[in-house]
Image (tube, rainbow, N blue to C red):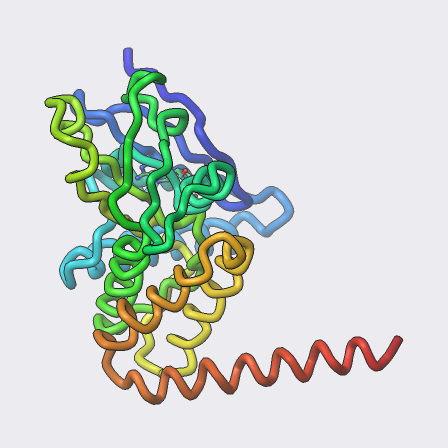
Amino acid sequence: MCTETLIDQGAEAKVFKGSFLGIPCIIKERFLKKYRHPMLDETLTHQRLVTEVRAMVRARKYGVECPALYFVDPVKHKIYMEYITGVTLDKFLNEAVTRRSVSKEHVFEGTLSTHCNKCPSKEHLTCSSLSQMAKKIGQSLAKLHNSGCIHGDITPCNILIRFPETEFENGIDAKSMELLTVYIDFGLSFMSSMAENRAVDLYVLERALKTYMKAFPVFTRVLLEEGYFPHVSQSQAVREKLVEGKKIEIKKKRNIYNTF
Ligand code: AMP
């Protein structure tokens, strides 16, 4: 019998680790909301599922790393997808912050044994370059935006750092390993090529990364300037919208302070 282990529960869905035709997989099950009218609830839940599946297919078509789709059960609102061995970017960065292990060249020499259940605890995974990772995240986001898709909820929790387990198991030098970044959770995505919507994606990600700015001041800059902007179409318009959005936010904050 196939066992499913609950690994996460959000407001919309439960995420299980299970298997599909003998392959380890993630099962994302959207649950019904009792406070909504059953017909409306069914329609909305189904729409979110379809949105997520379509966006994942589109993302892969345009070369954005995201889990491979195995099976979709529209009746039980379940998506079966590839299980990514790795950690979320927030856990990865937290670990790096805790270990305070960034050299002058912004090279991260930290260890990540605790988060990778495949790795024996005494073994250490070493990441060659944190800025390389930031650049990749930016490049992937540019590809996603160029495909006409807006993610809608880009936070470090929705970016996975994939560990190349076979290379690790074969004992290849950890320093030479490339850690891949994988986008997940496309449930709030939508189609748009408007610079404003792209800028909102960037703004959300930048804000979420602020927590780590002190430890890794270059992370966001590299992500945007070396990863995202050189590869996205309409880059100047997106840049302008991002600056504009930040100015509005600062003004709003000032107004709040002035009312006290
Ligand atoms: P989500 O609801 O899609 O944001 O997923 C919630 C959490 O489940 C994520 O933060 C990850 O820790 C984990 N998760 C989701 N999808 C995958 C996947 N394909 N592989 C591994 N872990 C995943």
